[in-house]
Length: 345
Image (cartoon, rainbow, N blue to C red; front, side, top):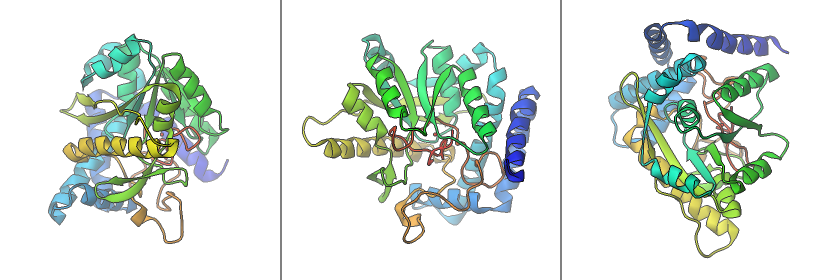
């Protein structure tokens, strides 16, 4: 293990081992202080976040974009402080910390024995939403995480999410898609963070007026298993509450080739994500390159050279196990948390 890998692993270990012991008000203040310091330094991650917000709010003034990027960093660090503390939260704290709308789309489908794919963008705290599903609804689910370096860091993320009641599959090896399909055919639930996949296997969509690629996996899983595909968006509402919206199902088109159906479904998914992000842009944690126009000339990779090793709370880094389960191209999702962007856990 390199010196950098050891430092990265130690920092995440310190977060999970130390931050969860802090009183909640102290953790909140710490996260906000780190966010403000990072924002003031205007590193590559902050500048990329601001550039992405400029697509979401195209008429925003420079002052408005600066306000948004500061709020975005505070939201991003809130995610990290909460995630470090989630293993110590009581079941009651988890149940009262999340209030989703239109949950019937999910519960009605599962009650009939039909599998469901929940697809989310990198908004607010997707780990809290997952913990709420396993705690409040008592419904287990499966997700995918891309392997990280060092291996000990990947192990930390797997243990963390398994501790919240999730089944975590490794992205590498090419077996994730088959396992996800089996879970869905059994009437199970699969959750994937899925608005970023700049690999060659991603599906091109129009997102806030420009072209990007998103994972094909959610649409392919729905087509192959008959599962219901539900977009979900999340946002913070006050210091102790996160809210969510379960959007109407993305239906499988009745005609067309598999590729044509996948393209239509991917665009519908992107449109649902865009609607939620436009309402709460400050809670969209996209500190990486997303649109194809932002990629280096002559490359087909979403890898942002400014990204840190895992992109977590490391002030100003662009990626981070962006908090969320995402399957890679073989499983149909992207990676950041996996990046669940190009996929981080």
